[in-house]
Length: 608
Image 1: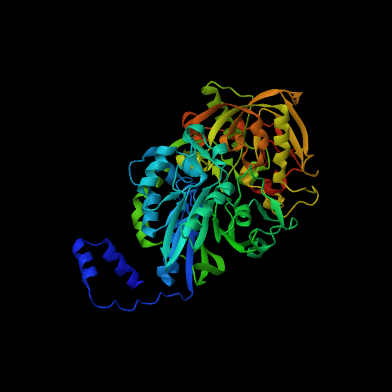
Image 2 (image 1 turned 60 degrees about the horizontal axis):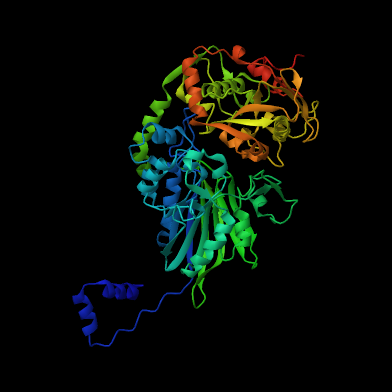
């Protein structure tokens, strides 16, 4: 290495130095032999940070010791110190959106350097793959963050309308004499979920086909190791416990070991890239919000490809170890391994990162703690808000209905979800934090035209949230009533307004809808409705592809969360019983056995 550097200086130096190099009559010294001994590279990865820097939950207003980049920073610095010259740090997206910290510094005060840029610059990231949520605030906000980051934002499959590259596709970096190529990709679901004016002039190509085009270019450019940093995960999950590291090591080709995640087309193609693209060594993945310590996938040449994912919100750091050897011509990966380091009570915040973003955090806390409204009694969320026709779901649907009507698009019905298990509007004063806590995502609002067939299929799919139940032998815990094969995210259980419908969960999936009526009449398949839904669901998110058959009539410029806050400001003294309208039934009754003893009877629970 010393000989190579000296030679470069001679070539790039001033003319006097070149003359000195040329005029030396002494015989050249014997070159220092190139060190080709085996070496170990370290890849560290974060993903889906969603502007969680502090170990703090802005929606509950409480500390959370199991999250935050400030804590992950401590792990990063510990691991980097073990292999300082041969370590690379990468992020795989959904970085600038997700908490009120991100909302504030995107929409309220976008003048300062973005807090995520400040924190990540300190940690020395080499690259970040774009996530779908990077586009939530539009290209101006994203462009400002891009300009503030000391590392490239990668998105090989994000193209301009003319097909040219919109972002840097990949980077090449050399550590320990080994040239590492990092290709960045994002799920093409951006085009489905995102507001069109946020992605004007952009298209999102298939990640698999993009990887097939770029990996050979990277190898031709001299990449010894090829890393795919992708905001997309496996399209399947283990049929057993996805929290068990061993379950992720099952043969991906065995259909008895894996179950579909309910993806939209191309949403999660990480496994296919590993299997079908030659010369990929490692996939650093994100998007699916799962801790995946290690997956091993065989490509067409029989080589084993490593895949990992560090979950969400800064709860884990992914740590990949690559043993690299020289084959006489170039370096190559001889062996690999990976693990996740969890953030918990034993991990301290990094003092430098904390100091850089403390003022941002304090400003955000003050912002979300301002009073905006009041209630006469609590609006309960979580499972007690989902397992019965609840005031909270009705409130969210009313907000959506009124927002649509104010925009000139009155609707026949609305659908929403209760996103978090740790949420309720309190009795008495309500803060902005409280209002945000009942709608934690930056979804916008759609008004769509659908027919009765679409509605019926969506309602039937809705019940995949639950396993088949025996009313006389219910699970011990309310969470155990949920399906596990596959498990369904809480935000994929929708609660509707203005239609009368019910489910019988003792029946198998696909035949649980007991009735569906609108204004007292059975719904016909050809009947046309206007529905208010968020942009994620309206775009087919969560596997609800039938909504893509509908017609988009209007898309809001503001987030649903902001409509919730405004509604509460203009409707002081909200009363749950007044808001609550009973139009939905669930059999067996899940509210009474699980929650009545502690929360009291529900207005819409079946009478005993």
